[in-house]
Length: 215
Image (cartoon, rainbow, N blue to C red):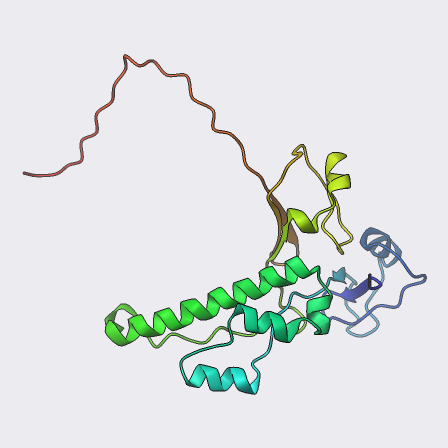
């Protein structure tokens, strides 16, 4: 796994650490009351995490768009397998990012077809899916159960593969973990199934609803 990289939140200047292997809280403690050597503002330390796969438009992709088609999930997965960004994540997680990309392109072309038939439904022509910002752009990451440590899960910890985080949980079987980017922080969502519980009701009771329909 790559060494942790810490940045100034204001200007994205990369900070020099006193020793290798420091965690985020250690770095924050070390740089407390310091000022950034680049922008001179009070230092707020943030960590650079592996960026999700956001493929750029290749020439073949652009030509496909012009023709009204695109490189689908299987084609992109084959092209990206050796890319550094793809390999920075577990394969299952990188594939989930490509699935999101595939869904975005499908939605775009479906919207274009609908625009041709009913332009009055739109404020303008549908736009192409956009790039993420190179340094600040973050994407939803979906970890299936195959990309989560089952050993740690049995001990009550969710440990996504290749990420330096762990989250306590009472669930022993989960479907997926979602790393959701927010403004300046991340939310970890643990998705699991729960059997429905029948509410205690009195079958002699009944309810009526007035729909307000005039006959």
